[in-house]
Length: 296
Image (cartoon, rainbow, N blue to C red; front, side, top):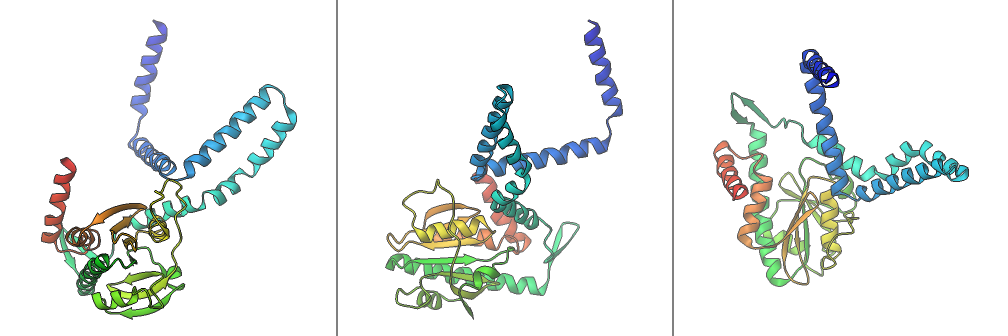
């Protein structure tokens, strides 16, 4: 009974000494731990963490059985563990930092009392992006019928300058004819990716990094793996047209969705690329159906 009373008094004392800063501190730590666990579960880092836990278990067993040689070797490994973790988890750390950077407040609009005032530059960029989307949709539908392979990357907040350097700068106004000519199977730039920046066909023939995800379906070839790889390292939206089947796919954040038609591709790209720069009325129209689909 005395133990329960003492525990209750300790709880009351903790409640009286609890501050708003403590609640804020707990919230921040919980958020960081949640995202860390999510990052580990969604990437190959989960296997590496399991390997580290196995090493710790072996160290504990060697300490208990007094296996001095094994204990010494593992102790030396743990001394350089911090540097090793930075090297091993470099792709995951980079991806997490890029996601933090992309979550910042965009400066393209000024929002006062819930009203959004787009600058002239943002309005022009929105029109250019809409024109690029229409051109890509028309070209993808045509290449799907002809079974012409294509890999088109829409650059968003994460700049792809290092990827652009691997290809040829085009800097052309997008149209279905230009996109079709670039991906024509005898054209010199057809065997790489096209980068669309600020609503223009900025570069073509670019080389993308392949995904290292071992769980990707064996049905997906190099073109699809490259699309997944660039989407894992950036916030880009990638459109893929399969050369074997003519199937249209969209890749975002390492997730691929397939079997798009002309209409569904048009709707998906506008939702992904024009939602941030759309007018309030357009935002409302595209936002409400997504909530209804989620509830359903």
